[in-house]
Length: 202
Image 1 (tube, rainbow, N blue to C red):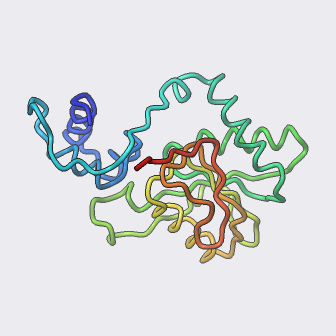
Image 2: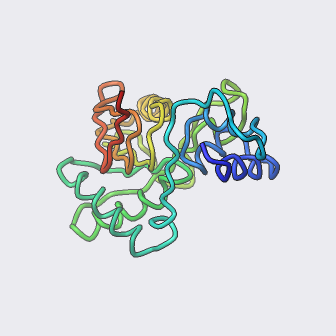
């Protein structure tokens, strides 16, 4: 892990970000986010870092044309499924979900947009609250749902999304992900399709 990542994590922590929010912002696992916030920036060598990959997709997220192009590639995956609702996982899945929904509309596929707020966004206390689907966007009840997120690190968030969708009467059809860090093909019998899979060697 480099010192810049440690510094970023600690800056976010000092601004009041919860561990889950730091993990989302830096695209690392919760364990890595915790580890980063407890390191000393000026230490020569850090010990016992979790095995993880930090993903920086600023070149995509900071440019609307690139974001649209990547979203179109994700949307192309979705085209083979019959869907009613595109569900973006906050925070980073929302722009992809929005653009995927727009892409499908332009291809005569009538879809609605829903937003899921994971429990890790609200608190460091893992069991304090469960994730929720925003009431300000589309309902998933009785709908075929595509789940959209940027990075899968452990699969925990996707399991929560799938569970909540089912509890609310929705039918999760597929999860589309920009980057898969754990190499999964399904979670709870829901296919997971990603544009990029990262595999650890050794």
